[in-house]
Length: 272
Image 1 (spheres, rainbow, N blue to C red):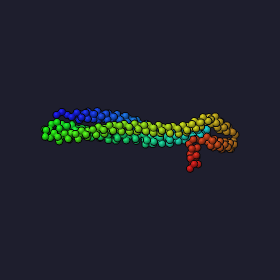
Image 2 (tube, one colour; image 1 turned 45 degrees about the vertical axis):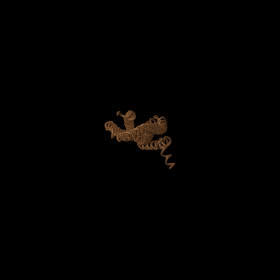
Image 3 (tube, helix red, strand yellow; image 1 turned 90 degrees about the horizontal axis):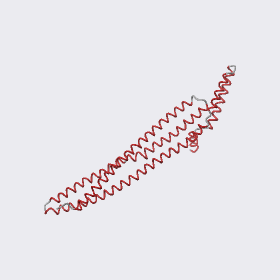
Image 4 (cartoon, one colour; image 1 turned 120 degrees about the vertical axis):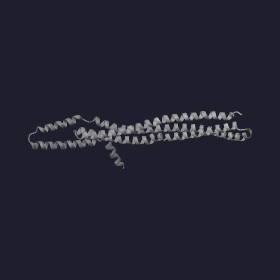
């Protein structure tokens, strides 16, 4: 006897579907793996950027301590606002790790499980081929038993075909939904950070705009003028008065020109 036509058709269809799912898994492994690696790198570099700006903040604070009142206020406000933005960037890094990188990492195990399913199908197919071979080679008195076994195996093959179809469909649907969700999260995280940063930097830019170099020049000019006064006592008293006046002006100016970070902290304390 020849091989049964329905068995041959089932084998052929199953081979095609098996190849299809293997190609889908191969593509998914490559593409999702590359996405995961790239986004993990993006997250690490964002964290490094946060750390570098923290160093910039420390440098600005040190710089401000050596400057005259006007510039000192401006640099201090800039440092405070940069520090606040890095708090937002830290939250950005944590959200990227949790909502973007971790879900993509999970696809390693998902694909591994799907590959296990295809391996089980391969074993089942080999068993079917073995039974069909046995049926064809058996003498007439055992033909009936072999026929029954072959029919059972053929029925199993049909179920396997249906399983493969469902597996391909479910995997593709889930993959598309997960990728969509990951990038929606990615965009949301980015928008949150940039919205917060823009809110802070808009005021920071305004504070930098009103920094008046002439005030510090005037401050220096007054100090030089005091140096020309007669008598040490007059000079000391005048210097003391000038310093007190400068400190008062600086305190008033500082109260008016606060960093966004300080205003935000004050508002938060009031609400709490």
